[in-house]
Length: 379
Image 1 (cartoon, rainbow, N blue to C red):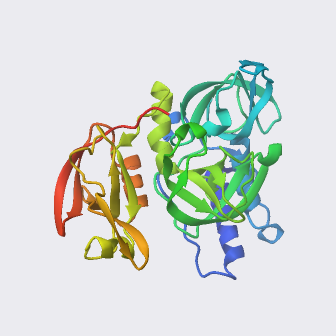
Image 2: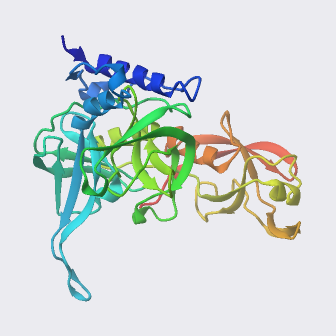
Image 3: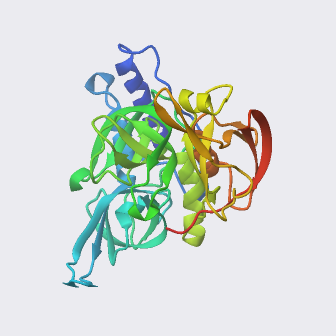
């Protein structure tokens, strides 16, 4: 008797937990609701899981997820440059996963500005694809396929996974399609540089950190928990055992807008900030080292005339410290303890046009000011 995708993945997760029991008492997990059920995700049928003695159970997860993952290849034609004709050919390479029946989610830096996009499924067939929407600030893109892939749309989590949750990364590292690596979620709410050069100085908020191996070509592929739910989109690696993915929560914010309109508008406060450390706290007579310090305010930006940037500097323990600026300690009812909290709030909790109550410490007193957020400038 065949078993449904959910039954197979549930068995695989249980077997993997048993295999890990010799090291840890418990492994955290997530049973969060999925966000793209309406996009057409349906149960997938797979063979029964092998006897526990024959493997860890990761094979069942891979077998269920891999048909929904594809290799993405982009090409450009020869173009004229100031130095003469430029070379055409292969431009970018990465991975992607089925979000609905005909649309694939991947990274913006994988897609770039191509003349042609081709996608190879697990059945090794190639199909052409076209860009639906791109967002360099979140490093997400959606393409529409001219044909079918063998798998079903993957569910996308609505909440962050617990640190310690086991994950698989499935994709095409170095062009080797159908590859998988295993690890855990080793960090949450990370702020990482956007991989796309078009995003400039802006960063990606709410990123997931993992020790699963990520290599060039994994970008855009899914990071899944052992129930087959996407918790992040692989986007960057910054050293051995240190990889990052765009969180499912940000995917849920951005991707529907990319499908609907082709772009996404990010909220924008127009400030540059530093985390309040003990030196900044001492130099500004702050009661404690918490929050983010407003180093500068963009002229004409949303916070201009409302928030105050640094006006001078002093020396604390031999280090130069800015002085005179506001320390942001809350946004609406959300505590801001570090810069990642500010980035996460702007990315997930606010949209352009929203008026936000900003709690600040100014001249030794805590007060609240109102900032109406703008739209982040185009790259």
